[in-house]
Amino acid sequence: MLGAFPEGGIWSPDTPLDAIRFASWKNLLLEAPKFLIIFLLVMISALMDASSLELAIKQDIDPNRELKAAGLSNMLCGVLGGFLGTASISATKINANLGAHFRYVGLVATLVILAVLFVGVDAIVYMPKFTVAGLLFYIGIEFMRERLVDTWQRVSPTDYLTIAVVFLMVAGVGFMEGFITGLAMGLVFFIAAYSRLPVVKFISDGTSPFQ
Image (cartoon, rainbow, N blue to C red; front, side, top):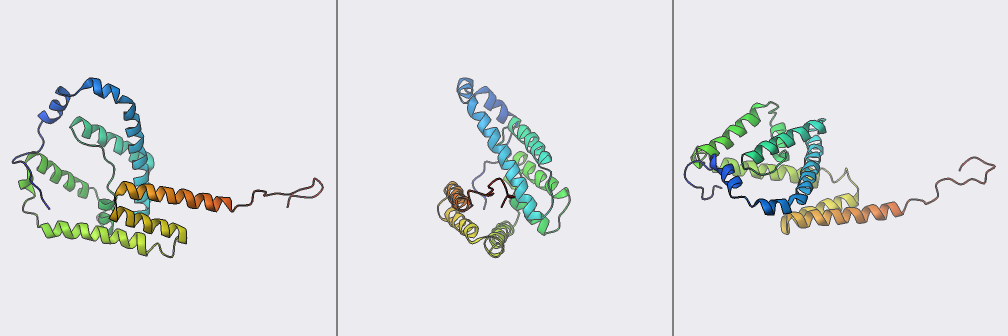
């Protein structure tokens, strides 16, 4: 579960400073147009995660609040030399299932991450590996049950076929391949269903009501 980590803290104040000091500003300016695409992708991802969380925990979520939280956290993460990210659906889901509806869960997770960054992997080396492995296994089984079993009677056959194919593609090939396959199947089924709608909705000869 734990790989080869350097001794001591992983993060230091020199990490973001070195990134600024040795950055190729000319290349960054050339890549500036792509930054807008990254912003849009993160925004769309945050909104999609918010929608998924609503379905997962069966509660209404304020998308504006989620966007603000994602923006502020990513700004802080970028300043400290981190990566972009959004809310964790799996972690939120398991907390909801366990009844942990309070902020201390996020605070404890933050403290553990900070301990690893500043102290090193020794901060969690004594954590039982079977606990982490079992937790990941439980999350995977829970999502498979919800998406592949519980949805059998709730969605149309074409929608379920899309879900099953995407699951097999992601598990057997890769995430991007599964995403593209699901998007393509969704478009094909949408066009096929839309083409069956009647072109003419109302008929009238001017002397009688619409029929």
